[in-house]
Image 1: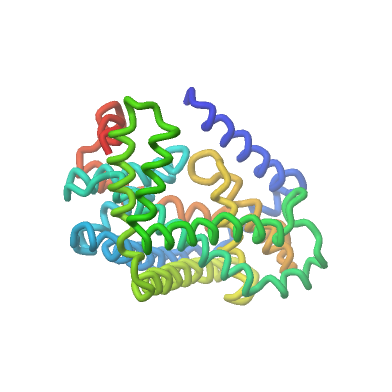
Image 2: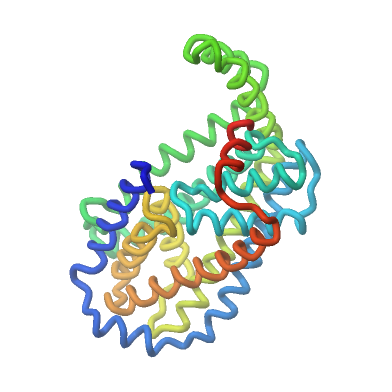
Length: 337
């Protein structure tokens, strides 16, 4: 609570929520929420859990060069990670699942975090593909107008492309040329890191680079990309099912665009649970498709809860079974790498 990142995230969430609420008619919003057919959430949640299972398989695949761990073993750990992302600031769930993996399977935290970062980079690339696939139609609908404050979807796509595609190229090059990468890293450590920390940082760097080993062949990198596409298509399927609980219809491609935009926007620091950074962009995309504001807001609100609550409850259950609590002990494990 005392860290400045938390308060920055809170302020950013407040800004996005203000953008959502300033022109909203609350009476119409609550009518839409009350009239929704919530039975449609059941297949939506089921499809989402299938996507989480595929995420567990993808992580199993990325970790194979380090240790072969079954997807069944990985699934609870992935659920714990997503629960942590939903209730802790700064995506601390990623660190939490790396810690649980180390406790259960002995995989170094720095190495598993490398695979987690690779996941996120591929996720970002797929989200950008979803956006660019639908960008011409959105530009036609909006006439180039700004969607969120002073930001247009083109702005989000541009900055997202620079960040994610740039990161992907760096990781692919690091994986393909590990010896050269380690030499460069050691040179930087030797010149930039204080002497008393160099050995430890060098060890963490070596383990981190080891976590990139699954990207050393184009075939394996393509496999990770295709798996990421399947994951996000399944998650878009949840958007589609939840849409049927409300009185509007847009195409599956429009929901792919919404999925891409909101998940790119949630990379912005925010309060835990992506409050505001998920909602404002999603509502803006739907309004661009001429969905009434009250309907777009009620749908996005219910969708957000449906994405947040089930995986958070499941992850909390698995975390309780593990007997893990966030505290000094976990922080010491993270520092040990």
